[in-house]
Amino acid sequence: MIPMCHPLQINGVDIDINIIDKDHIEILCSVEMEGKTGVEMEALTGASVAGLTIYDMCKSISQKMVIKEVKLLEKTGGKSDFKSPRLE
Image 1 (cartoon, rainbow, N blue to C red):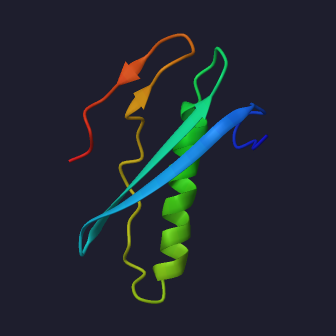
Image 2: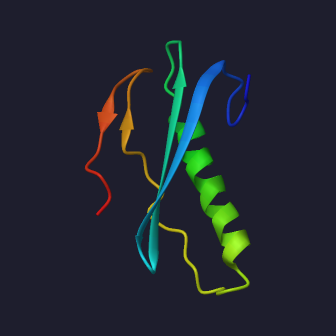
């Protein structure tokens, strides 16, 4: 079990980091579990921690970095499903 926000039996977490250009990266975090609840908070936490880790590793190059646009793109399970357009 990997507790991030809630004590859930998480089956898997995937983090994808995509370099958009020299000034932008995209971090996507997917979390999977079996059960009746969504794991959007765990995915948002995973993406945020990945962004903070990149900031920490790159702060010697520049401290002008900004972490922004942390948002839910898609969720299935729980009370309702949700799908948002992908970040531009």
